[in-house]
Length: 235
Image (cartoon, rainbow, N blue to C red; front, top):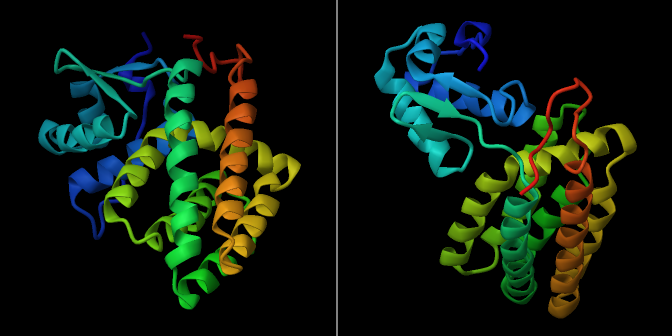
């Protein structure tokens, strides 16, 4: 187990509560892989390296645990869950159905202003920073969810996005190097929504999610990442 002293976390505290700042920094490090999947860290050591007491750390960790980004062991150890094919399949089976449903509903009930926003977000310039691009992608999908007219569905989809951020980042990193493959999908989906072609829009979204899942699954088959670290554990 790596020493917690090797993990240095600089948290911007200005304008944020300590718990929120800790949450933001830890989430960033988990998503970017600076905290490696499968890594274990002592909570007291982590709090000391952050320069905070254990209370705001635990508050941040509880939120991260709800998002599936950490697991807590015996109230002392923080575990960064490994990336697994099993979890990927479970999450994306649900996303395939719910994303397609939200897209069909949006094509039926969204206002002209909402469809115009979706079209604009589909055509936005790609970011070079993978984490920023991850948020841009989420903004596009969130605009579709928000316009579907079903608040319960939006809540479920938001929770799924929190759970799948680490997996989607794999795909976003590939696209930064290879070009935004998903951009064409986004434009086609947005155009189908604007044309009120609900079945077609849902079908395009279903295909988009399925392609993403397939590409992520291929990526996590690799036993080592570019840094020589264990990238994922099979399940």
